[in-house]
Length: 132
Image 1 (cartoon, rainbow, N blue to C red):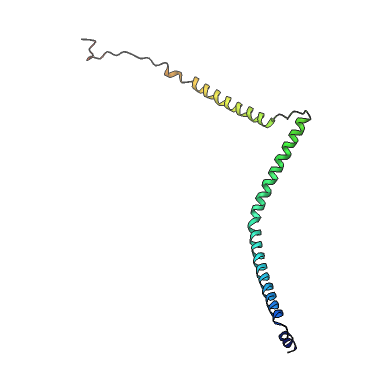
Image 2 (cartoon, rainbow, N blue to C red; image 1 turned 180 degrees about the vertical axis):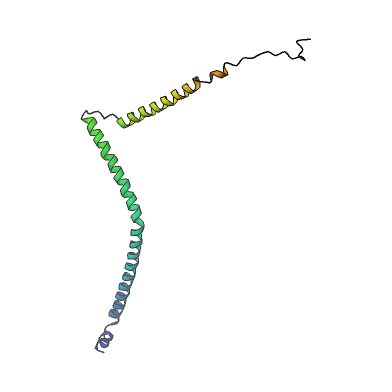
């Protein structure tokens, strides 16, 4: 009862200010809840994007580090190392192609000799025009 009388004794501008304040607090709380929900959903949605961006930045940083090392070596007068893996791979591919070509050449050169030994015989037929 005491509190009710105290609230009723306030002036009209104070009551309007109090009502406006309560309305403002309510609006801020509602907006805060909405922003919090939006932030949560944005955080969940952006997790995958952040991972992809992190991978992209990581690979770009690794490439930059590799290029910087090569540039430093070039400025220091050091030659880049030979790409041994590429050279060994090319040699193996060449050997495989050579082996395949040799096998194909041997197969083509060793045809059956019995086919060459066939003799053709002329046969005179009784109805043939050569005998008439």
